[in-house]
Length: 555
Image (tube, rainbow, N blue to C red):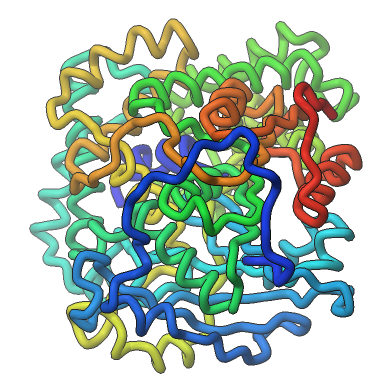
């Protein structure tokens, strides 16, 4: 991957990232909800019955204390009987109070590109409150194309393909990208041409190595998979919690299957009514505000480790690093993942700083130390922060993958997938879900407004969207939520959220019939599972007892 291509990938990672029914049934009273639309149930088709008739065969996971299974879903819901499928890993942590068990609680950890099954085995069930863990089996799954899914997305060539690439082709590829580093605000024609070329190369690599599955990894299809999972778990209705991107998945499910929702928590909301440009402006402004919060409140969390004595000094240091990295990559140690690129360019620095905004309680101290050292000439620790912030999942068991090869679409053997395909999945889903202009002009037109609204966070965000210009088109369009008949949905919004700004939570809650908003006055990305007792109590009471959250509820 050349430097321009990596810059595109890291910027996309920045902007995405870093998700069943109770046996007692029912939901909250539908006082504020309209009647369900008179449309056919999407699951009623006879050619989907084999999928809905599945029952999961649970076995012990590689990690003690968890059970694993595999779920088969159609590749193409328009042609579910053509034999082409995805096989998705599923994992569960059994309810800790089995005598009072309500059912299954399915979650999505975010992304898009985060693997739910792998996250659960890494201890994601501990993010849930004790009341929820006691009453529900906590269930995670890898969405189609993600993590241990067979087939899975990849934008990278297989190792043998890389080794066999002719030297002449390598030289030609290198010549496409000019020397130097990609600026955070491409102003010149040369910089813009390089950015567009790098984005085109990234899209072409994904098309080449993931092929036909690219058009079938969108959120609407993943939501249909979620309903098959609900049925396979033996649940009449879905109890669900989605963080970040998981709110998009939950919203899509509620729109397609409103009468099948028992309870739904959407934490770190994404507003489906925003177009690509509005999304960039919203999210990049959120990151800018969070970095300002870091400068203003660093001493509260990092104390003497802050890289400046005043907010002004901290802001100046960060700006200084961006400027240096635009002239020349910041030096790193030989064992750094950035060493092969000559150091950290400006996009990589922006990525690392922004990712550290997700959990201030964990990341502001190491960020502060890394910024100090980078300012002194060694960006190794800053690069390590960027690596830790990337989305992804652990490998799934290779034997399971081999057993499911016959289910993969197209080729008899699926393409080799890197250990972490989170970046590929993030790009694929974001580009497929949100329509993007095919011409470069709208992107260049968006740069000045993005700069005004969010500085380099905005301009880097606009440039990152260029990859979607050459992506396969999906059918989704920006829209207000249409989920008539769904019971009251609980939306949780954090006032200082960098990635999913609070205003989007307010908007999403207003769009749901009888939607409820729980406000968490704090910093960082999402609220539930980060230790606030008030948030935990209110969310768990809703999940377990279907207890409403009062208007204006704040923690």
